[in-house]
Image 1 (cartoon, rainbow, N blue to C red):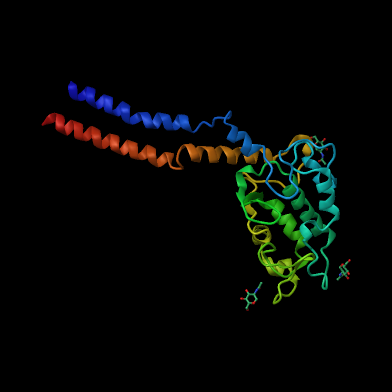
Image 2 (cartoon, helix red, strand yellow):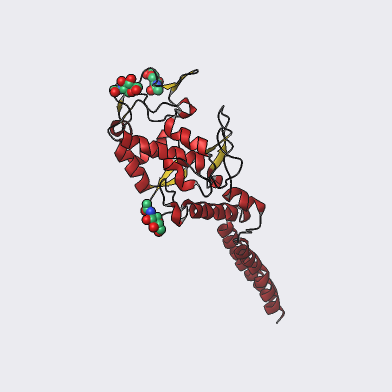
Length: 270
Ligand SMILES: *[C@@H]1O[C@H](CO)[C@@H](O)[C@H](O)[C@H]1NC(C)=O
Ligand SMILES: *[C@@H]1O[C@H](CO)[C@@H](O)[C@H](O)[C@H]1NC(C)=O
Ligand SMILES: *[C@@H]1O[C@H](CO)[C@@H](O)[C@H](O)[C@H]1NC(C)=O
């Protein structure tokens, strides 16, 4: 009789972590850190302090106007100036960037300047222009493929434009000394390699059926990337609360419960 009671008690005690674990995976949406992660702009040269609506954003950046980290001026510059002194035409002796390729880089720049969804992928950096950057943002494979295909016959001299360019003070980037210009198709081979390498792993290519970002969207039906950021934020919060290993904690508590119950039964019989 006594053994049965002890056993029952122990089982209940050992099941408690299991119950609390399943409670913990719920995210506290009132936590200010949750809002901060979902409604934030990176700390960088042109970004606003917080996302907000804009009356008008220029051309390809207009989808973000309901909630954006960019101003109209920034989106105008993204289309018409050499932002950050970075020259896409670094192989101009052979070929300037084609219009169809260029529009993808403008779209990418709009995303960079305007997106309010980058909180979960923001990391600190030590750079003249910016204190934070994106890292491994999931990009939908089909967006990456059209970008690469439209640039396949354009020219570049190095795969990683962040790490490998030479910088001439006041002038901007130029091809590294021992490089030569080749087509994107020759330099990158695959769309995945292109998207992930060109901006030094700002992007990570994911299948379209996974949670991934869209560079182009119809803003009248909302920004589809909001949901991707919410998904990632919930993941990050769950990992923080569960210590990243809630399942293994659960299994170990099960295992210790079994061991303790067995021992109790053995000792009770002695
Ligand atoms: C690329 O553009 C620059 C500046 O407009 C021009 O000087 C150069 O000739 C162009 N290159 C080619 C290959 O057309
Ligand atoms: C330039 O050449 C050197 C020596 O061959 C090599 O180590 C280096 O990686 C090259 N730089 C670039 C940017 O390709
Ligand atoms: C955007 O979505 C709206 C509403 O569904 C639709 O009426 C409009 O034609 C779409 N625009 C484009 C460019 O697809």
